[in-house]
Length: 388
Image (cartoon, rainbow, N blue to C red; front, side):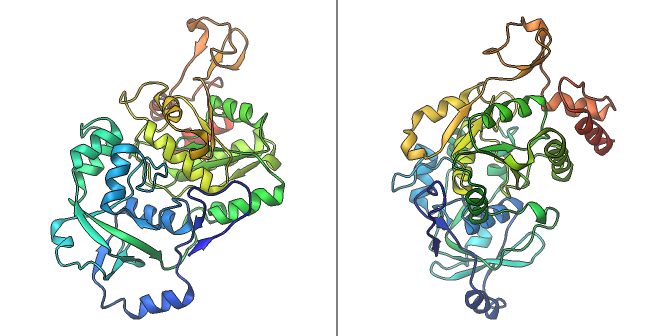
């Protein structure tokens, strides 16, 4: 089923997908739960199931069939021409795939073994892992966390439409579980016509705050949308990050112009392609604009500094349907005593304070407080308490 919505920006593909089972459908699935073949999902596949079901991955209604998968890997488009940059697949081993019959329902269990969804298996197919790695992540090195996931997952993709049995409250952040249909309604109720989305997997630092507030000067509202699905083991834990976002909103933002909500997606670390992916997700949530900063969704030195911005130039703005807001790398300028970029600061490189998330994590582990030029003091205190 689909939700036809006249609220704000059109969802990607034209309709906001809804694959959460009705009461009747859920009862039908539960009646057969002990007779359906089972596939156990990992954390990322569970996130993908949820994002498909709530419309975050519109226009996808399930895990990709081979034609769509190959077209996305090669050309960043679905077979019908719709822009889509990251494959959404359910990969299993040969042993798991062998007895499964196309045309049948498959029971989907979460990592704990709980029955959470159903797949109507339309296709199972083999795929080329190295080819996916090179095209999507631009490397075949298994040191890359996204490539490592691809290499470790099964060699057969299961495809077909899905149903999520029910949309349960998030175990840790129920207050901030705002799905696309709800966020669109909230934007409309606030009278926001233009909304900028911000993706983050790190606590907000002064550079983030600077570009968010620059964006807020030109739009009606900010949709602060941190990712709380699977991330690298050395990323700051989601609960710590959420407390930092709350602190920032309470103390440093006009509260009537910001909505904080969680993004259930898993991180891919696919750099430029993931910047497009993140933008399309926020389009589905109702955003008209999307902030793209330096090295968006990058990891290590795999991507050029502004490659995540350049990739948007490969598409017509009409087919993306959301406007990227491209920002230079922000820093603290000692000469002007404020946050700035090379576009606004007359400073020399020696007068600029650059601190990456990696450097800050290292400082916190050593018990060092990040300087106020990098992080608001309340946020720094929260981070050091959590890391110690």
